[in-house]
Length: 158
Length: 199
Image (cartoon, rainbow over all chains, first blue to last red; front, side):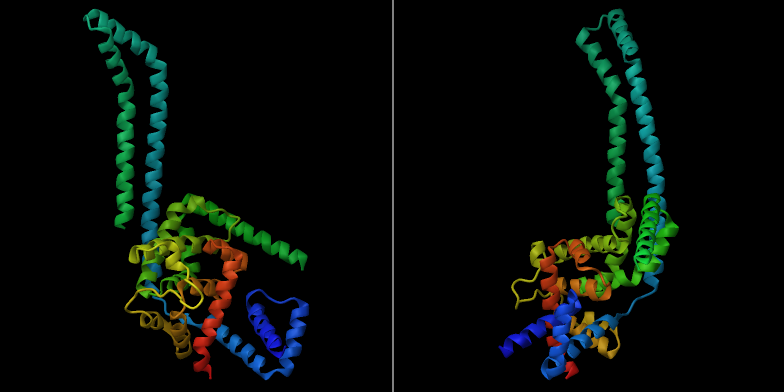
């Protein structure tokens, strides 16, 4: 029975630091501590350990802050410039795509006329039309992929 | 009291909003300010997690680079420091995984109650102790060095950062019950290690 009381006190001492106690638990613990030297000692030890933990100060190299701030500024500038470039690229792509869609019928007629004029078979001039239509998108995709790979490498290297 | 709490909450939310907007813009002045404001707390957290000054310093820089790159993902409903520690934690886990190619559970979670995981570092715990100044701090550091990283982590979040238990659970991505049990066990182990020092 006495063992249970001390065990409960021990649990409450820890709970007080971790979760906090209800008024009833706090009242019980205070009453118990008044009459139990063993649990009082544990409460004191716990408080001392946590005080020591809170005041344990790791040494810090201030130059690390300056170095990090400098690195962060450089990287921020890179990212901002990169974002601006990518935005310009996307705008160009969108405009190019719209222009491509709008001009597709005209281009089709142009290829059809060339095919007729130079007696090129239908599958060949249709392939030519398809290639000329997708070529800009393929080039842009390749540029984006290359830039992305390069960006990842820069991050890894840093 | 209610009014004061309300005002405080509004102020915190406003500040988090400012941080979120600044991070989206990648504002270098804001970042300077954040590094200045949180440097010590972040470093202490990383030191507790890795147990090595050199690694904590490397991860410190990487964490801020990641903050810069992922800044647009910061949700202002989170406290900035909780988000910052989450980023630092993920980087530390990646780092520990590279150093000890085991599962994440094995790396950060102790196996059983009486077998705390020790980091395989030949300089450990002396390197960890050297990172602290003062005699008492060195004793605490020596005791901390014998704790599993996952215990040190929750102890620092609770007793250095004064984080709420729910916040800690979110940062360490574990259930509340796990956080509590790590805290209780960590405290008990720390008390045990320091018993002789304080005797």
